[in-house]
Image (cartoon, rainbow, N blue to C red):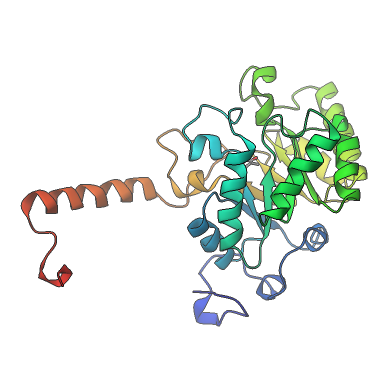
Length: 287
Ligand code: KIV
C-alpha cells in the first residue's frame, strides 16, 4: 500500500499508471496538471467518500473528481439536477480527507453557479474551505465571465463541454453532441473561449473521437475525455462504472475493470447462508 513517498517497486500496483512525475510526493496542483499536456495522459476518476478517495490517491490517480454523478451513483436520483450544495460539500469534505497527492475537484451542482457571479463565487469558496483544490463548472462561452471571476479570485476551474449532464432537459436525453459541422464549430468556440478565460483543463464529454481530437488540438490546456475517444489528453470515468457497481446497464464508453457488484452479491449471499446455518460467527470470531 502506497501511503506517501516513492513506492517501492513491489508496492506498485501492476498495470497502473506510474511515471516519474506520479512517483513524486509533490501534490498535484491545477498548474502542474495543466503542464502535462503533450507529456503524460491525465488519469481521473470520481470518488464520493473517504475510502474510495484513498484508494484512488494511493493508486496514483492525478485528479479525483467529486462529481455530481453522486446524485445517481450514491443518492439514487435519476439525474444530477436534484444534487444540492450541501450534498456536494458533505462528500467533498470526505473525499478531501482521503487524498494526499491528487488534485481534488468538486463539481458545482445545478444552479449553484448560474444565478449570479457573486453567488457562484461564494459557493465555489465553500468547496475550497472543505478541502477541494478546484471546482468544475459545465458550459462554454456563456461561462467566460464566471471563469474569469473564479480564477482571478484564486479558484482554479475545470471546464466541461459537450454532453453536459446538467443540460439533460434541454438536450432531451443523454445524446452525443457535436454531430453537425455547426455543432462542432460551436464546441470549438466554447473550448477556445473557456481556455482563454483561464480553465486549467477541460472535460469533453459525449462527442465523437474526431471532434474531441479537434478540440484537443485547438486548445493549450489538456482535455479530459469521457465518452470522447482516445485523442484527449486524459480520461475520466465514474468509479462505479469502472468497478461494476452501477447495475447491469453499461454505457458504450465504459470499460468495466472489475465486477465488484457481482462479488458483493456473492459475499452477502454467503453471509446470509452462514447466519441461517449458524456457522457464523465461528469460534475464531468470538471473544
Ligand atoms: O459528475 C461527474 O461524474 C462528471 C463526469 C465528468 C465524470 O461530471
